[in-house]
Image: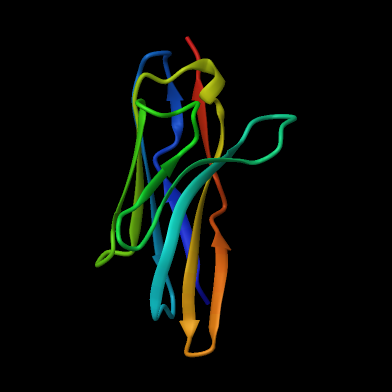
Length: 120
């Protein structure tokens, strides 16, 4: 059974920084796209950033220049470095990954979410 486990959320003041990490575990033959999404109260889940297996990145316009996504394929981790945080970044952040679980199966997985609160 594949699991994605996030860590690093918490309370931070506006302008501060946080680093979110997500590690994949279980029977994994390979990992494709990895990413982070977020969902604020009363809103739909939205893309924050994704990174392909070769390192190609994609960011939401609202976070460009403030947030950096990276991955370590050997450690099966994806990291989100968030700087210059704003109140509107407050949300539950979810890790996402496309994982090859067998010769015949490639599935999309989600973590349980980690809460980021930006407030003074």
